[in-house]
Image (cartoon, rainbow, N blue to C red; front, side):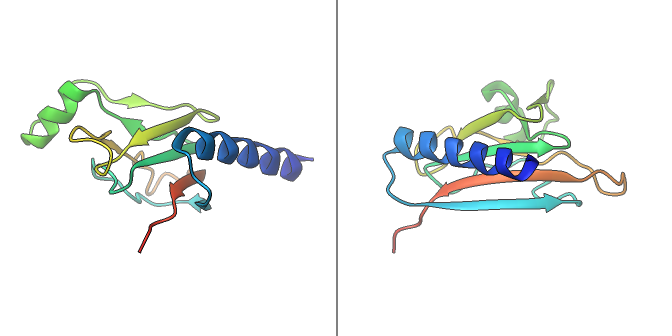
Length: 125
């Protein structure tokens, strides 16, 4: 039952993501994360990426003001966090000069596990 619900949700998110970005193909990554993967603040080199955490701490993101602070080497004033089950579409460097700045929450050594879904456009050669 849980597996069927997960598959149904991934398919629903994929359909909406493809519709929004007018895509015929996409890359799907569903993984268990137990480390500080993508722990540094960054922007992705894609048009837009959908990120959803099903289990565990959600992706952290910054307002434009705090993204500017980080770019200058200053700590952000406020770190925003997605909740489990939230789906966020993060504009990347290909789409804008002010891409979404985000990171995976630091969980190394805590024993926490995250079930993470990432949807990307298929890269054209």
